[in-house]
Image 1 (spheres, rainbow, N blue to C red):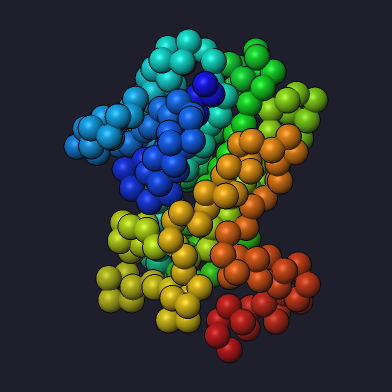
Image 2 (tube, rainbow, N blue to C red):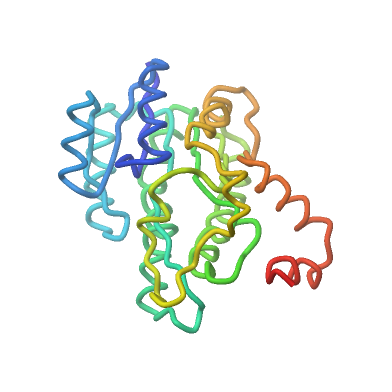
Length: 256
C-alpha cells in the first residue's frame, strides 16, 4: 500500500482528495491546522497530523510524525494547503505578504525538504503541488496570492530538473474556479472593495472532484505530466498567455 501525505485537508481539494485516495487503496495521512478539523478527519478514519505551514516548528514536528507513521516509506507528498490575501498591492503590508509566502511557498519548501530524503532513499516518489490559474496569469487584486503561486511554479520547475536523474516526479495541478470554501477564507485587505470572480466565471466553475482524474494520473502514470490544467478557463488562460502580446493581455485582464 502506497502512502501519501496531503496538506490542507479540512475542506475542498484536500478533503476530497483524501477521501478519494483512501477509497482507491492509498494509505492517506491527512493534515490540517485546527484541532476541531483534525477530530473530524479522525472520525472519518484518517491518520492525521496537525500542521501550520506558517510555523517552522510545526512543519518540523509534522514531518517527523509523517516519517514515523510510514516508517520512512513515503510514496507521495501532495502540497495542497494554502490561502489567499486579496487586495490591491498598495493595500497589502509587508507582514501580510510575508504571511502569504510563508504558508504558500516557504512552508512548502521546508516540508518538501524534510520529506524528500525518504523518497530519494527508496528512489521513488511523487511531489504534487496545488498551484492556480493565477500562477499562470496574474490578475488585479490577487497580486500577493498570484506571486506566491508564480514562485511555487518556478520552484517546482527547478525541483523537477534537479530530480531528473531519479524516479521522483514533480507535478503541478493548476485549478481554475472550483466550488470550494477557498474564497470564503480569503483575507481581503479592502472591505469596501472585495475582490470577487467575475460573474461569467460561474459558467466555468467546477466541483473540486474535477481535479481527481488529474491527481490519479500524476500519482500513477509512469510519465506524469508536468502541469495539469483544470477547467476550460485555466486552459484558455495558458494558451492566451503564450500567444497574445502582453499589452493585449493587459487589456483583457483589465476588462478594457
